[in-house]
Image (cartoon, rainbow, N blue to C red; front, top):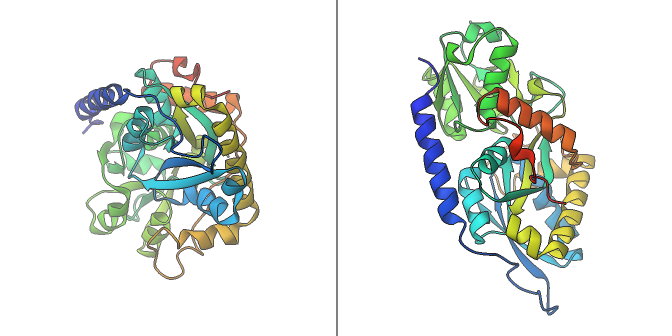
Length: 324
């Protein structure tokens, strides 16, 4: 069965409608703007290892030093966070970069303020996005022909990673059936044989491997070693109206990201404060890269892969994506 184009089109239309309906209000920090105390910032986060540096940065006092008090609201993905940020109910959000590009292609006013995570250097060991298979007969990308592959959402970075991996190994996107499945459900689906392969992120990659699954060379790292894969973003109105708050946030964020990269043991330890992990899993997971440098050329590489996968028409959504 080819990719679920009709389902994707329906999902895209629903996303456009949700995004545009939500762009209704300007936004601002929740308190402290009069100098009486710290500015309150509500962040939309995903309960994955990528956001560990912010939790660690709060513990280290980096945001408090910048006069910021963070509240973190968890969502399952960027589809829920983007409208919350553009409507002003959240000031800052976390999303993969592909979803931000797709959003801007649909006229949604988001601005990326910093890279949040990067691919690893190993195509067979990427904690943020790694294709895993339980069938021992699947040892290479060519073995995926005619198989069913699970991703968390269509029209996102995992679809781009799968399409890119297939095409670089001589297959087309229509050679597999792509289905949506929540990442926490993927290890069980692999073990039961409900899907042949699944695009997982940590800690679920480690969990699936413990159940007998193995890596296939389709991953974020396979798209480009150290490629930026996700970022922190805000709305155009917030970036325009609160440049000082945004500058203080990015200062603390970049310090947090660098601290996490330099102190991996502390980054692993903070995972147990917000993820429900079995004993010992946090010590085994593969951490992403957290270099926060936001280089336009690297973001363009992501945009080019997104366009080649057909999720955006051209590189136009890059214009204005990165906040000054």
